[in-house]
Image (cartoon, rainbow, N blue to C red):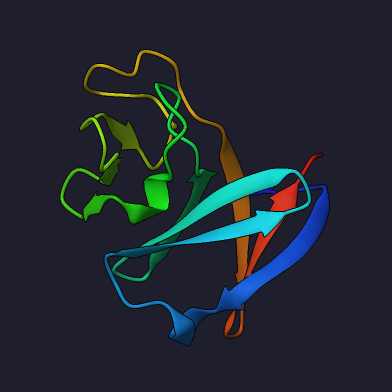
Length: 110
């Protein structure tokens, strides 16, 4: 797999996030929900595409690799950002990540 290109920003250390949890980060104009499922990390836009609510406050489903918006119940794929349930019909952005040693980096742009 090719190394993602773009500007890297350190979000946190691996040990700062529990498995099956999420946390919000702001990198410039980007609001990012970092989600840990087991040993895998995902980064998606933190704002629900249906309404202006933080996805990082929602429930993580490790089996389906989705996060549910806590306000209206739309679920989004952590891999593609696509919504699986209404009322959301538009995807949220996804971001490449790099995990090096104990650091989690998001890649912006590229």
